[in-house]
Length: 394
Image 1 (cartoon, helix red, strand yellow):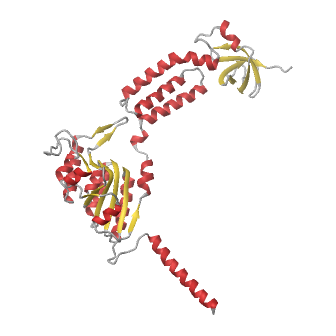
Image 2 (cartoon, one colour):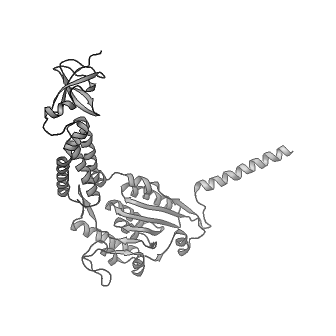
Image 3 (cartoon, one colour):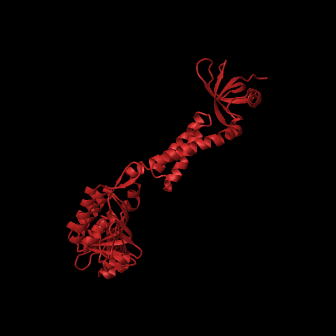
């Protein structure tokens, strides 16, 4: 009898655990009216991948007839077409949408925020500066008048569709828009949290999501969270034209290649051009050489100055040379009779071999066949080529 009851209790516990696990796995519990809340995070660069993934989240929220969709926004912007796609989906949805600007909603982020029915902002946040830009190989430039005109109206119509001030939205895009007491002509509008509330762009200043739930009477409703890994990791790693053609990265890689080539083709020249490229990478990173012309000028000057000042010292330190012109009376003692290790077969009259001397690779020639791994003796020097002979045993 005891065993029978134990089995029933065990089965009952398993059933309870199953339903509890199923509820946790779903990630939300429905309210009495069958409504839930969806939350997602739009962070990082706005691009097509993010727009597509957001559309999927919105459709899921619509299929469950969610009570609200909360978007926490922290972005400097991104692609205009991707932002417009997100905006269109937000305008068309019947779900109550709330933008929680936590830090910044700049450019495309401002458009997405205005596409929601309600905007709230964390202390110290900003919204605005939405002038479209176009990327060149080396820098960002303002978009043409046609694009600015389009985006200005896009911002205004989006704002007005959700009862946000349309003139404020226009001033975020076009510096020619003047609003008395708000922004002068010739300046782009960006609003702080308190300014946005005063101008009725945002409704509340809130510290966190809990306060947001309280302001919109959403307390007690369990949230279906979509933290969106793409907003925190994938989007920031997605290659863009700007990142691929980033001048800082290009100059750094060029320097790396030049310094690597110095070990293949010794001569104490390429290393200085590599150092010059790295110098330009640093100045470009800090904005000191923004244009291509200034970068090339800095590269040329730095490389030549380093070449003139340091080549002689480095050759004397690591190569045994004391002047650019080989002076046999002074320098032959540094080479003649010294042992070297053959790195590549030295074959008479057919090809130049390679040897290691003082930690550096040198070209080598010989009147006899000396194999890889053997030890040889330097007999003469011709520029950067060593003449060697086989080391006789005994």
